[in-house]
Image (cartoon, rainbow, N blue to C red):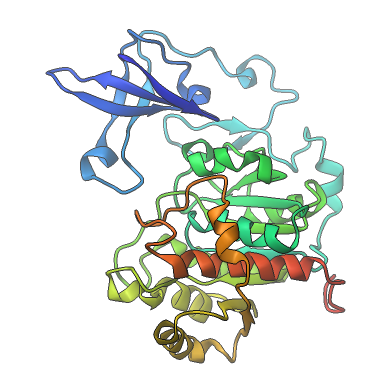
Length: 362
């Protein structure tokens, strides 16, 4: 290792000289491998970097072979330690305290929790929607308490996301669910994470989305965002109000993602068995609006399509505390994508200001 380039919450970006010549940009998670120092030898996994993945532009530090980190607290005293094992049966599996475990201070609350009481929950396909959804919430509800649930379809460590680090002051907390880890709270399932957002973080609005690094094969079912439909089902099962953020684009060069992405059409149209409120920006460019309406027509019977005015959303997006980027495209290059996410945030904020519907509660 030659030196540190920069750091953010939970991660350190390094310059590393490679045996045989050359250098690589590497990323280390000190909680897993220890704190790297200049001169350290590092063991790297460079697979994603060599593949040129959009979110995998790093070699990842697997270990500091000559200076291993200290044993975790679990090895010293397990009485008050958690036993949630995440990234299970991989060499760097962390052992964490689950929010609803016996040793958790929130155990008693969550042991009795079974209801979201009409809590609005925005479900989104891509991690890049998070800051746009938050911008939309803030337009009408600047003081709203917003929680983020990091699902495990993309990056497992919350620490990988510079976006999430930059939004820390805007969120009441991040809950990492499933195999994901590194949030302010850890949950074993999406259901327990949702209940923790409601009963521990006292959230007014929740956003559910995978971490950076959407996986897709170009086929109808081979993409990690299919979990959006399962998130709708989980929210509904617990008495929440699912708000669907649609992946809309006029700029994506791939036909399957233009208009309404096939990811949204499959997740909401085939996987989601419960009714959600799918948000459509009311002021899309006419040709795109016609394409979106045609794509969503088959979903109109199983979901509620909600037209949301976009006044003030562009300005809010431009005030985002973190850069807006999806698939390498910024706000002006893919305006409809970010506008759709912000509209979903605005709708969720408006729902949060209403009394829970009579059907909320279990």
